[in-house]
Length: 251
Length: 225
Image 1 (cartoon, chains in turn brown, blue):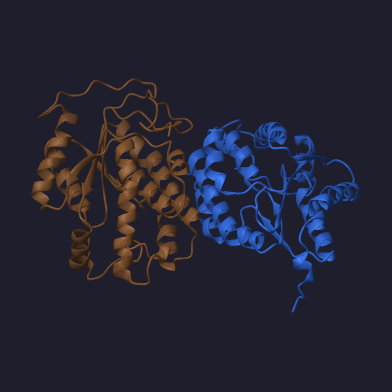
Image 2 (cartoon, helix red, strand yellow; image 1 turned 90 degrees about the vertical axis):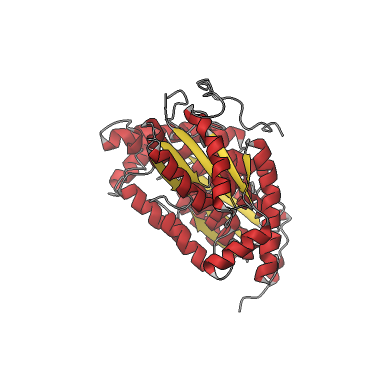
């Protein structure tokens, strides 16, 4: 099902390669309940008999280590960091996501290019640059966007880690010397960037201010039709040739 | 123009085209004239050199990750080493710049427009010198100096030929074709690199002089130490 890319496909990747796999993306800020939802969804899909491969940011064998080290040192420039994440993503796409989809598995991605694009833009990259950079990415069958209020995110971060994360608070942007203030300013900017991404790339928004069970019920309802189960009938197979990119690609 | 106080000169061409020798000579000359010169080479950042080495060793790089890794490496070098001296009014001499990526990635099948977009953060140089040389000459130079031809330099990852020299010639020919093509679209100063070193250097100085004519010589007035 997942065969369309947003822009020019990877060299050597043919968009009309038949695939029965499905690519499902869960997006949302830290503390929006992403990992819990990925866990629940994986469990459910596996019980239903689907092979599930999960993936996320910073998990490539190629550069994950370098990203971690760079985050420790806080020394890389914004463009460099954005590109390092792009390497990580491309490596996983080519060596993990595409092979899994071709084998008919469901790929469950805990964050995808959208987070990477939003982060890069908040740090000064142009939207067009980010959009074109990730043009080789496969368009998922479904993008679920878990939306939670900043106060909820803050509460969950504190209860989980006891403090706020340097990067999730956008401290590298020098928005404020105060971690908490920076957190709110940064999350506000990020959610503004997610607005256009969500509109352009057809996100399905889910209210993540509620408890995990309620959220999961909504997500299931969105996922089920992909397998021709409950809800809407299974969508027809996408045309082999890539469609025009994201809806607002002309902008 | 890039709008920064400094000046940016770029040397491009195949391996063995003699560009590095010429870039070093030009740098020396500029320094002797009192300019503050900053010199940088392709692929010299600590950040990704380890990853590239690791990836090359295991041959697990694809055209896309190969391209993105080099872009990351370039961005790091750019943000850390090229931009600061450019903003501070230095003469920056680059032995290879974004154009190296354009030709290599194109030869590996990446979409040229995609690659150009990635590097669009890098300003256009004041001048790009392209050292044009037949592939056969670079191969002869390599063999004569007993330099080893490495896997990626020969484009062995593309499966052009199982034989190293054969693959090298074919891959380098692709690079040369791409260099020749963009030398027109990007207005390179084309240097026939089969001429004597001295006469090429004299030409280069002739090309550089007008660019530095209106260059604010503030950097020259500053005293070292």
